[in-house]
Amino acid sequence: MKIPSTTVGRLENLSQTIWALEEAHRAEPLPPLERLNLLRSHYEIQQLREEELEIPKKDRSFLYLNESSKVQVLLVHGGHSTPASYIQLGKRLYRAGMTVYATLLPNEETVGFQRGGVPWQLSRAELEMRYDLLHHLGENTHVVGSSFGAVLAIGLAKVKPVKSLVLLSPPLRPTLRFAERMALTWRKLFPQLFENMVASTPHRWMADRYTALRVARKTVKELNCPILAIHARNNMELDHRGLDLIRRHARNKTSKAVLLDEGGHKLLHGKSGAKVEEEILSYIQAQT
Image (cartoon, rainbow, N blue to C red; front, side, top):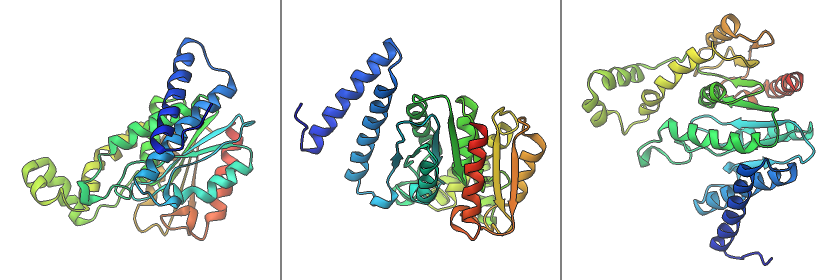
């Protein structure tokens, strides 16, 4: 079969492949090789779209596909981040024999406040779709979420059979600035004032997502999957005392809360980055 050279032709070819594979899967579960092809095809379309949007290469989604692996890991970046934050961890997990997928979610980093902000529910919907594609490969699907990505991961674990959940700097006890507290108050009491004065500022990020944070605090107490949560004392953006929710309320007895002295907010890129990578790898291996 001739492979189309144009982007439009490639998209048409990939779309036809996906349609045929998904129709076949609905009729009867696909064999392992065809499930891999389905994931590859979706990922190739994702890459074409990100290229068309001129997303910098380092920030695009990445898939490290280990065809012989029985373990899959979905990496969920934060609200002001991209898959680039996970490249080193992704390579580490891949070398350990796992398939790793870091999908670029629509957020302020990729869309920007200048376009009106991004509803967090859009990222959640995208995340569920990517999880389903990865989970086609097998039941051992683990999820790693960082910062607000940890909140999205908690919500995902409530509705999907996540094998284990890793939360990096989860905002389970956010530290709100005065302006952010005012934004929340205005949104509740004076919705029109909120739209006029706050909606176009960075403080809308917290106002829009605070409901998701509150739901995550409740949801984490209901999850049955193993949870590893890691925070650093010197995280100036989020209160590490949110780890108390894991220590006191996690249902699975293998759940674990780790508090580091150093590491900052971006744990994988701080002084304790190598230690954090090792904690994640060891925990996922223990739960597989």
